[in-house]
Amino acid sequence: MAGLANTSTAEIQARDARHHWHPFSDMAALNAAGSRVVTAAEGWTLTDSEGHQVLDGMSGLWNVAVGYGRREIVDAVAEALTTLSYTNTFFQCTHPAAAAYAEAIAGLLPGHLNRIFFTSSGSEANDTAFRAARTYWDLKGKPEKKRFIARRNGYHGSTVLGASLGGMAPMHGQSGLPIEGISHIDQPYWFGDGRLLGMSPAEYGHFAAERLAVEIDRLGADTVAAFIGEPIQGAGGVVIPPDTYWPRIAEICAERDILLVADEVICGFGRTGAMWGFETFGFSPDIVTMAKAMTSGYIPCGGVAFSDEVAATLETGGEFFHGYTASGHPAACAAGLANLAIIDRERLVERVATDIGPYLAARWASLGDHPLVGETRMRGLIGAFELVRDKAALERFPADIAAGTRCRDLSVRNGLVMRAVGDTMVIAPPLVISHEAADLIVARARKTLDDLHAALTGA
Image (cartoon, rainbow, N blue to C red; front, side, top):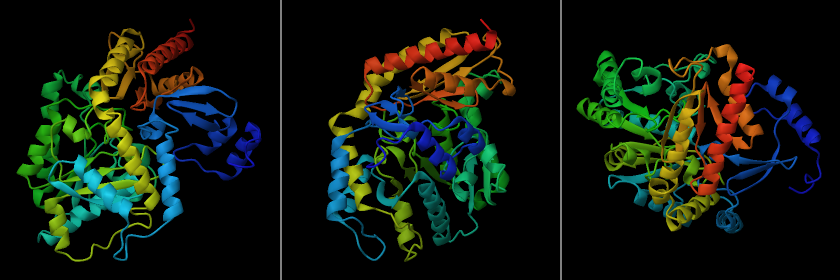
């Protein structure tokens, strides 16, 4: 970034405040405080404009799976841009990297998922799945099957359609969302729901899944195109369902002739200790959406995998009037292939399942003895803990305390990026983190909890 190296933090913040509108931000509050200016990253460490280093416990935005500064991805992108800076895939054209990357992704999926449609993001991927599912039923002679069912507190992007599929109340409170034809069932949140109902996790998994059956029957199965869900709800607070949940969801969809869409935007490419979250939870989808770790965030890329049945049906309709300018962009496909090579060579999925995942899970669970922690949970390298005011009663803090937000801010000061979802603190570090880095995550999280306890109690 020539010409910016000697720019002061204050000047960058001033430019940012004048011209840059940030995603999901209270811009008045952000500009008053000043943005944190990140200038470099390596491995799992971020460096800001003042030289402070912070351990990135969130893999950027859940996406930097192989860590920062991987030269082979950078070189693959540079070579792609030098050789073929752009070509569209609309006009009966392809290019070597698009064909190779589609084949590589299909090779990572179960045998019935062989066709890959490229997008630029997870939001676009879920838009694509929505249109494809509706078109599929049209071509099956069932045009009345248009409705989608999703879950409250699920996240499927921030386009009008993605935000409508998602079940985030604050997003629905703006712009008159959700759009017509989408309904939501409760999430499988044992700590916040099943525990209060007096159910074991296994019992609650069945109970929560049956909510889908009830909703399909209420709407009429002949009107429902698909159910969409994240294997683990990430932005909703790392809601890890009981193991009994997803197999029953799959049964319900099959029994009622409903397509099952797995949103793997966060879980895909090893996050849960398997290549796909649906493998971790033992179910088989008809459509899979993906993004984020497809390229470890080095270049924007998303995708959709169609089952052979869905793809064959769509082919009977002739042209599918859908696509994006950057679908199968040469640089994105090159980055994706280099990223997959790292994941394979370093056996990162296996590492999450058998090494760093269990190691961090055990260390993370040790935070459960803190007086502010009501529950810890982790699957693979995605985890959370619940902040509570009264540990014995598992009583939550009043909203005006803003315990989660205060915890997040203290965490950054202590050198760790954690994300607050209400009063749930979540982490999803890069798949390459060392045991020593895992120890630092837990030590800094504990220091943050101690600081928050002192601030709340005046101790």
